[in-house]
Length: 459
Image (cartoon, rainbow, N blue to C red; front, side, top):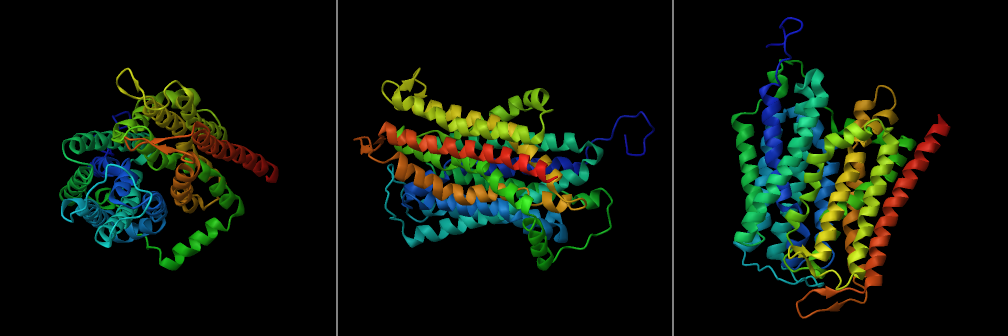
């Protein structure tokens, strides 16, 4: 039925650009998560040392992806989503090629054991750094274009539209990890970037051949004037000049600081102390699997919780998710013995950690947007929601270097190197690192609760 059908008729289906946008998002997320769990390991095996892998992965790549949509979203509005997406996927395809280039064509070798020293040469470092920056740039363009398409085409069914969108993100995550697992086992670790590049090319073709700008498809011919750089900077001043909002961004970044460790500290911990060839793509599948299977249940059971209480619960969960890794340190045999001949004890607890983090995400992530909307001055809700990714950007900026320091300087203190190349940790030192991470999560939850109480007193 069309939009002009009689009352009582079935609602019209979502327009084609809604579905092609979601298909494009599936490809982009598959590309990203095909390599996300291994970036720090890949860079470490190329000789980037103990700290540079986490810095490049988190403080550069993740920071750009979550901070730049403030600018790239405005540019996409000005030049059109289709042109912006085509540019984004060209950048991403080139970026993934650059990430694999040193091994494919540059003669670089992946060392089986990490070195704490930086041994990488400039012929390897230049394409890798270029690839990291371009992934950040390309990813920052895709985010506002796809979310914007869903917003413009879902009509009165935005809740359903964004539920489908969020589900597609996690399906893409599962697909990317699964395909990458097959190819890296068949070839070597650099194959994950071939998978990512292929997914980016497919996404480019979908946009080029099928995707239509939502404004064109929905008949919105009136063009809104694009914001200039000066207007964007003025918007940042307005948002960050709001004391209560800036404080919220600070206290909520603790959640994402912990979340960021899934792709920084956890891979380092497993690779260097538990097993030399960890299946981090399969282990981190626990995150999208829990979200896909439990999202409806959590929403039905706890959806009526006030946003701030839900965020605090999620932050407490994500904090305690780190603490459980103390258990295998003191169990008989430590982290290395295999459980039911499936995977090492330490790896099993990492999978449980990732699953618990997903539960924390279900309680906190979506409610953050709801809470941010309530903090915005009347009439400026859209402006403030445009900055909703800043906590993730701040958590990533700090999380990479801090996570690398926690692992190398705290957890590995007093560790001895085994003949296999793995490190045998001092349980007290390793436990101290997990306790620090838990304390950061709990402090973030407490500060969030205190902030909300302070805000109520102000009102």
